[in-house]
Amino acid sequence: MQEFHIKDTTWNCSGTSIDFSASTSYGEANFFTHNTWCGTVSWAGGSSTSLFLNQNTDIGKLTLSGAWGNLVNSDNMIGGLADTATGNISASGFGQIGWTPVVKFGGSGGSSTGWTYASSGFAARLPNGGFKLHGEITFSAKAGGAATGSFNVSGSPYLCSTSGAGDPGGGTPMVLLNMSGLVSSVQAQMLSDSTVVLTQYASVGQVVLTDANFTTSSQIQFDVECNKAQ
Image 1 (cartoon, helix red, strand yellow):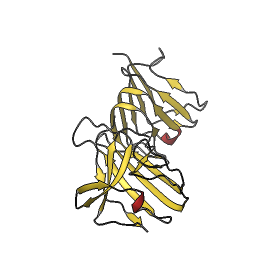
Image 2 (cartoon, rainbow, N blue to C red; image 1 turned 120 degrees about the vertical axis):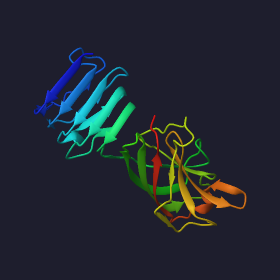
Image 3 (cartoon, rainbow, N blue to C red; image 1 turned 135 degrees about the vertical axis):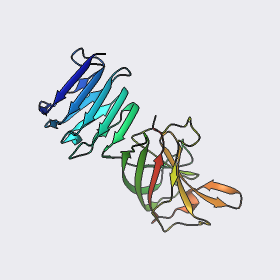
């Protein structure tokens, strides 16, 4: 196995992006320890390429993407690592990255036509190989002929594995204000891949919230976890 090591240096001030899978200058296993990033940079990986990041500074300037054979991030300082990477990922100290929750009524093929809302959130890798989503949504208006049907939220920067029964997770929303027609406690659930739904228990069992449960001043804050990312 070819290895590449860099340690105790100031790295990538030029902001040069690197595709590790295409470069002959780097190894199958690449180790970066005790370094400082001074330029914003993007690194792409390959399925046979491994990257090990340990105790680096200003790692928030580094963005990772692509499918890595192994990606290990531990005890890095000052700024969270922003990544949309996939593959065999071990995380200890991955930082938060922002995401914008996208509201739809009518299932995955629905829309938010006629609804006015603002949304924000963050996503973070978890040490178990999964990830957490935090979302905040505030509605402010509803026009005639607005979209109807089941409510869902998409736009996650990470994808959740659905191959295992326990991979998609759930959580109880922290804030539910100015809702309508709720008959039980509400759960936020990772439905599949990158979609979140809100459910409640009704007389017919567990059902997804619909447009009927929302008003022009509804507010939601939720946390939901995926136990295994794709």
